[in-house]
Length: 219
Image (cartoon, rainbow, N blue to C red; front, side, top):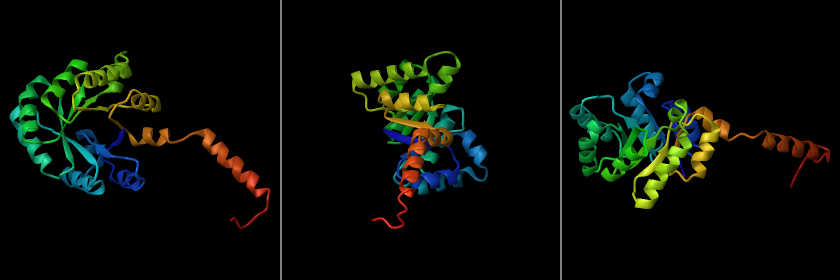
C-alpha cells in the first residue's frame, strides 16, 4: 500500500518525508495555487524532497493537442513525475500516445468502473477514482472503488488503483482494507489517522506507574 499526501505544502512534505511512511505526493492546480510562487519551482522542489517517490502533477490545458504538449513538458521536469490527465474521451488518443512514449500517467477524475477499465486498456500507470465526490452525490464511494479493484484483478491489468478524494479516516481505512494499491489524502486526514486516545491514555498510565518507583536511571 502506497500512501501519498495530497498537497503542495512544501514544509509539510519535508516534515513527513523524514518519517519514512509516505511514498509520494499528488498535486493539482488548486494545491499549487494555494502554495503560491512559481509552480514550476514548487514542483521541482517537491520532486527533489522525495527523489525515490512518485509525484503526480496535473495538466492545466484543455485542448487535446495542448494537453499532449504540456504533458511532455511536465514529464521532463523530473524523472519521478507522473502526469495527471483527466479521464475524458477527448483525451483517449493522446493518453494512448503518451503511454507509447513511456510517460508515466495518473488518470484523474475517474468516476465509473468502465472509465477505469478503458484507462487500464490504454496501459496507464494509475487511475484515481474520487471517493469523496461519489459520497457527495449519495453513491457509496468505497463500493465503487471495490468494483474498480475487482476489474483490475480479474483481468490482470497492471494499472494501479489510487484512491483519491479521501476526506475521512474511515475512507482511508476502508481503502486500505479493500486492497487499493495506493491512497492519497490531505495532510490533516493523514495526521488524524495516526492518533488514538487509547495510545495517549496508555502512555500516561505507564509514565505514572513508573514515576511511583522513584527510579532516576534505567537501565
